Length: 259
Ligand code: HXC
Image (cartoon, rainbow, N blue to C red; front, side, top):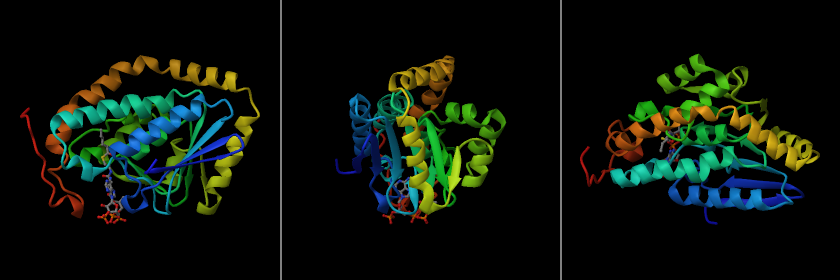
């Protein structure tokens, strides 16, 4: 695995996204590696809890890899969205092994969406969270429109999504988006404390409890479809038009189709 680090300590599996120079942005390879790591961890009977974090001090995950989009065709953009949904975001949400997101810095776009797919979220007080997608001309396409509203309620979700702004860890805590906020130095120990508590309980019962909680939210499938339809059409065309970052300036999108 080139983009992630996997460690195990007793019954806890640690998965760390290791692209700190790119603020741990999710490129295609990283998504594939994460998918494999989560599946293998879930199949391993000795693993009873998983902690997901980002390397470096700055970011958990600063979103999907924008530089990668620059060369994407519409077809590739569509595939990226659909594959990500199935192979990572929904996969994590439906694992039988609990996943704790230890949010050590920026959790933006697909980064916050992955944190929201996890079962529990703990944030460093330096973390900043947000869904900036509409500022790029697309909508949160990895479950964000659905999971944010589930976690914080429709009104707050609307504000976060429509303003595309960032909120602090403390604000996220107040609205229930993260379960706990810690000093940066205490983040992993707080995550481990919760993981160890989980390890004491019946893994079978835990798996069934996750299934039951998720089952109650399953009638949202129409919402997930609504989310991905416009995304697949607009991702390739619109995401590069409003170039918010210096690194997009030279980017050129090679459209093979017109919409
Ligand atoms: C690729 C990224 C990146 C990203 C940062 N980097 N975010 N690379 N994809 N999402 C890279 C930068 O290019 C730069 O690399 C390095 O990380 C440091 O970033 P800076 O911008 O120099 O850092 P800073 O000024 O501190 O700003 C931090 C930041 C900013 C506020 C987090 O980087 C930012 O706004 N990033 C984009 C966040 C975003 O829009 N995410 C959502 C993407 S859309 P170099 O090599 O230049 O030094 C999404 C959903 C898509 O996630 C749905 C798909 C289906």
